[in-house]
Image (cartoon, rainbow, N blue to C red; front, side, top):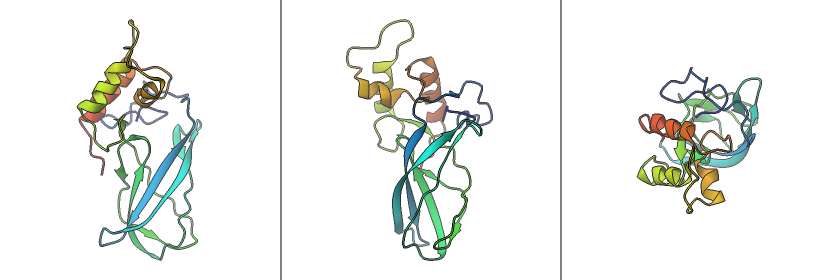
Length: 171
C-alpha cells in the first residue's frame, strides 16, 4: 500500500519507494467478522497506529459479544479496498488473537471498494509534478488521492495506483 515496509501488492517485498514517514500515523479500520454461513456476526471500528520500528500499522480491536467459533475476517480502511484476512480464524470471547498481517490495496479514492476510472480521474485532477493540479482539486480530493500519504499527489501515487489496479482483489 505504499507506506512503510509494505511495497505494493505487485511486489510486496520491495519497499524502497514506500513512504517511511506517513502524515497520518493513525488510521481508522473497520473489522467485519462473518460466521460459517457468511452472515455478518460482528462489525467494529477502531484505529491502527503506524509503527516506524516495524514499518507497518498495528492495532487492537475489541469485539464485544462474540461467541467462540470459526470466522472469516475482513479489514477495511479508507482509501483501500476491503481485504480478507488469510485463513479461517478461531476466535474466543475475552481473548486477544493475533491475526495474520494483511496488505491492503491502495487507491480507492471514492470509497466504493473497487479501483476504476473514477479513482483514476480523481487522481489525475490532483496530480502535480511540474504543473499545478487542476482547479477542480479540492483539499479533500487531494487527501483521498495521496495514496502513499506523503502530502503530494505525484508520480509515486500514480505508479502505485497503476500497480495496485492490476491486483485489485479486495473482498
